[in-house]
Amino acid sequence: MVVVATIAFGMGIDKSNVRRIIHYGLPQSLEAYYQEAGRAGRDGKLSDCTLYCNFMRTPTLLPNKRSDEQTRAAYRMLRDCFHYALNTSTCRARILVKYFGEEFGPDGCQMCDVCINGPPEMHDFKEEAVVFMNVLQAQAGQAIEGMDYNSTDCYISGRRNFGAVPDFRTIVSYIREKIPRFAVTDKIWWQGLARILEDMGYIQEAAEIVSNLLQ
Ligand SMILES: [Zn+2]
Image (cartoon, rainbow, N blue to C red; front, side, top):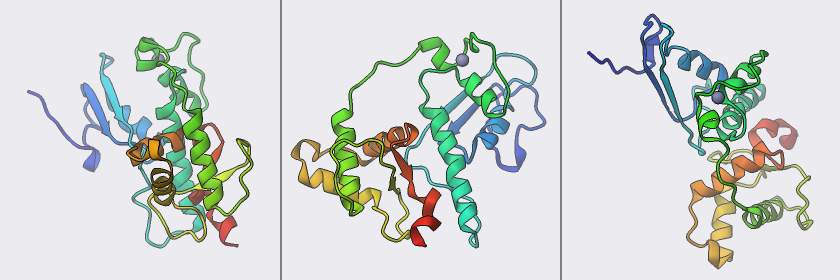
């Protein structure tokens, strides 16, 4: 008999023989992911965890009345999830364990996709990255300084109530409109690029610094 269940009401928490955990989209936080994925294989037998990453993810389950600090914390937790998902060079078990302050063996787990498949093929998206950041700077009303990757900028996805911060959708629309070779590019593709740039420290999610901008 095979039972398929959601995590609602803590399903699987008291079962030792959960064989597969599927996250259809990023969890709220790595703490949540650790807890949920940890339901697999408590009997010590091999089990699978699959994580489908959605680049458009914004925090959910936030209380209606929330402080700026709560919003920022939710975005920070989500950013850690993106960082975990976007990693392509370090054993996933090692990253997860390190997040909780522990060390994993030098050889990695030898079971995750990174350990098994190795680093993926590299692609050069410098041109796209420069276009995106130039438009971002222009939308933010700042002078464009060539390819100055070090200037911290803001972008925002899906939420448009944070003052003068450039809206992600506006940026992508502008790129599609003004640069013919990008006319049919997908918004989710740009979101993926933005997440990579964010992960590399070139840009920053605006919600994390919202109160600074509004003051
Ligand atoms: Zn591994």
